[in-house]
Image (cartoon, rainbow, N blue to C red; front, top):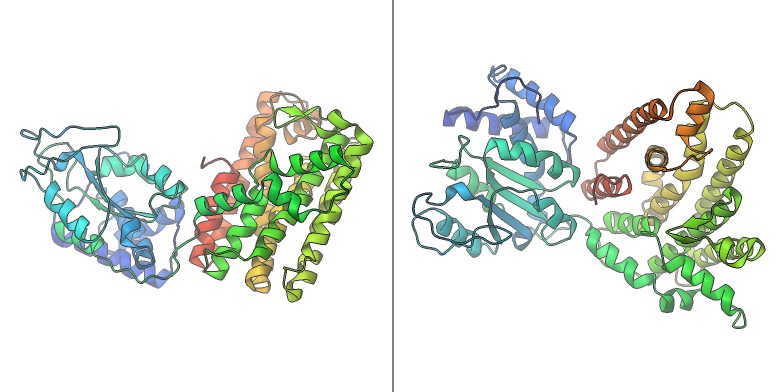
Length: 498
């Protein structure tokens, strides 16, 4: 968490611990800090907090950061049902000398012998309908949040374990309240019982908490089936091969990030986990445009494989593949005018799709021309922005239009999508196993005569800068469900989160 040369400590005086907790709460309110917060922000405010309390230089930085993060999240815990909050307890709370409880892959299987505090805490959690886990660490908790099994964590742990778990919790934007053990070690340890009781008993108010990514992914799985997709597309019954290729291109491969983003943004801004039929139609339109761009891109770059199989033009020839891409573009526009989509939304959806379509085409044209001339890295990055960002932006725009919030976020989505799109393309460039003339790595090698290894280092630095700016951009958001959603989606798109 911090880069202190001295070992981080928990204040051993209860009044000091209370002072840090209370100061963190006041600072979060005064600075209007909304979750999730970047590590750099927490470090900055922890330093300020300790200075205000005259505690600087006593190695309480991590302890202050923990309470800042707690204070950031605790105001939003009431929106999360207690049944979706996990109480995570460490092994060291058991009776070290007498505990005979077995363990499985997850953790301790308490036998409720009454010789330690674990049965008592478990009973308190049961009364609150909170699930309990006794485990060595919280390393798997972020995975459970991503899988939708839990939505928040109340955890007791030593400072050393919290330091290790903190980055993963931040990456996954896990709502968490941590109660640090008063000292490290696995025996005869203590914690602030009143702090844990307060965290466990936080109320619930039934308000909308955050978008469930697993639920959205389930919606995508149900939508992108041959039966559902075929029911919305207009095919000539005699065109068996053509129709089969179109449906295959939409359903068979890819993570469907862009329609997933449209669904999720709609859910966040509408404060609803229910999706009207027109969202299904709009999401399919978004994917039609995306898959059309891939078909055309494969032809233009003469790529022989995508998703581990021959590209469409390799399977059925360039003329038919070109026509398939054109058909998907046409279907995308038609679907945005579908009768299920409210008439008040159709024109704006078409307008934003057309704008994105034009920008993407300009980006591709720019790439062709630049390949014939000397190209600076800045020119390459601008091409990446035009080629990649519009598809992310239009997905967010469609979700916002459907929720009736487009004018509130259109400028923000433009800026954020530009940063996310360039980050995504730079990450893609770094993953290229072979030379690619359109890659920023190869571009830099051509213009500077540097080695591939040196070029990759420069592009890695560029990627880290754009990635950081994308997360910094999210600091502007005051809508917490939307901020959490875009934080998690950014992690997925950039493969920080699997």
